[in-house]
View (cartoon, rainbow, N blue to C red):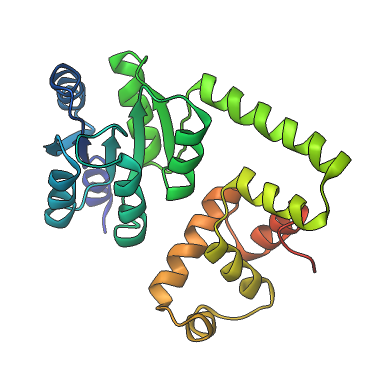
Length: 237
C-alpha cells in the first residue's frame, strides 16, 4: 500500500448505527453524526428488532445505543453484538446513570458509557474515541464506579476472604469468567490453537477474548497481560 492509498484508508469514515427510540433525540443524534466527515451513518433503529436487522445487514465500527427501548433492553443488543460482531464497538448513550445499568452494560461488552448531556462536538469526539479503541465514560459515572471500587476495597480488607477479593477485583475490571479462563491458559503458555481445543471454541473466538482482555487491562502483549492480571489478583502464579 503506497502513501496515497494509506492516506485514503486512514481518512475513510467510520460506519455508525444509531439505536434510539425517542424521535426528538433520534433526530438530534442523526444530525450530529451526519455533521462529521469522519462518521458515516449506516442506519437508524427505534427498536431492538430493527437494531438486530441492521447489525445483520451492515458492519458498523460503532453502535451508538440507548438502553431504554420499547421491545427490549439495549444491554441485550450489546451482549449479542459482543459475541457476534466483536469488531463492532458499542457506545451507550442514555439517561440511566444508576450502578445496575452501568455495570450490566460494561459486563455485556460496552466500550463506553455516556449520559445524554454532551454537546454535539463532544459527542462526535467520544464516538471517534471509541472507534479508535478508547473507552469514554461520563465523569459522574466514573466517580460512581471509583467510589464503588474504593468501598469494595475497604470491605475486602476488613471482612472478605481471598476468593471474595478475587470476585470483586474481576468485577472492577470487567473480566468475564470466559475471559479469565482464557487468561489462565495464556499464562500457562498455551497457544491460541491449544486453548481453542481445550475450551471447545474456535481460534477466532480465542483471539477475540484475548483482544478484549488486552483492552480491559490496557496492555498490548501477552507478558503485559499476565503481569497486570497477576497484580490485580486474577492469576496466582
